[in-house]
Image (cartoon, rainbow, N blue to C red; front, side):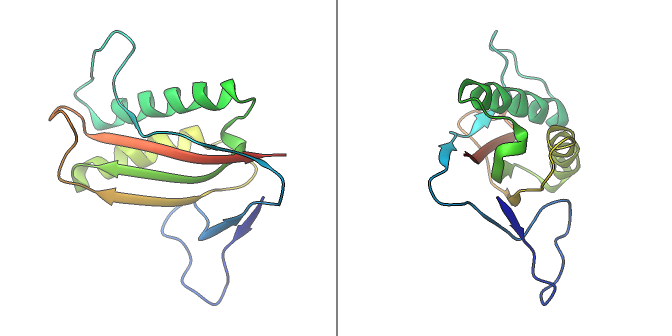
Length: 129
């Protein structure tokens, strides 16, 4: 994959690319949005802890396809308040810390999810040869 961040437009606000090119004939995995809920149905109060759970789940999904965070082409994330952005971004940066290329990224503030205790939801698009 190739990062696409033209120098003719404003640089990204954080550690992501404006676009990512996926070569022809690569395998693609699109995940569902993952919420900050553990296997035992517990939900931490903190947005950062919820985001960590989201990325742990995404790692497991990618692993089941023989992929890692290094194969992520795009991350879409949703938080319920601006106050949750920093915690989400810290968890995202930890998830992507060892990747050799940054993905494209979208982060939206939404009014809520199916249950009021959820603060973060994350999905990824990944690709590998």
